[in-house]
Length: 232
Ligand code: UDP
Image (tube, rainbow, N blue to C red; front, side):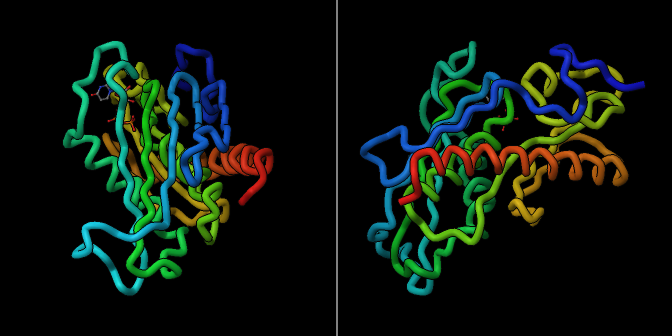
């Protein structure tokens, strides 16, 4: 039996609305927003610039430094402002998801700062943040081998589904909820995957296939938003 989603979506359906906009912060070198349902991320890129502190410089290649932050009122229960274990982890994951496509070898001793703010959060924030950051990096004119697109696949009870919202992430009946955020290039090269929960290897393959199709959809939306503003 296929799990019935409360919002009426099909298992492989992305949340709506999906919105992407590039060039939203005039003072940044590159910027973008990405919205998936009730989750909204904005990203601002500053750099490449001299890397400080100096002892963290890499003479062989530049450094991508990501900072993920959820604003206090992005969720109903106010979040304590400032860094947390969770935000530090997501910042690192964002760096790992983006680094494979950014041509950092062109910028020895330099740093590119990416600031990601979640202005509304309803799960899937790391994916929305990565989607916004990828567009902001392209908008900043940073050479990239490719764009990346991110989405969470997962499982609700026994059904493989795409793009879980917070209500679904908290689902506890039957086999409960499994969340698998995945980032990939339009060619299907995975740069980031996480798994929270239980899933069989057969269902994992199914989830990755679902994410692959969805990330192509997201890629087209990102590309369109970049074209609208004109790449630097
Ligand atoms: N969340 C929250 N308070 C917190 C952390 C998370 O309300 O301090 C909510 C928020 O809606 C977030 C969701 O829980 O999007 C899922 O968080 P998770 O850590 O699984 O990361 P995400 O799915 O957002 O990438």
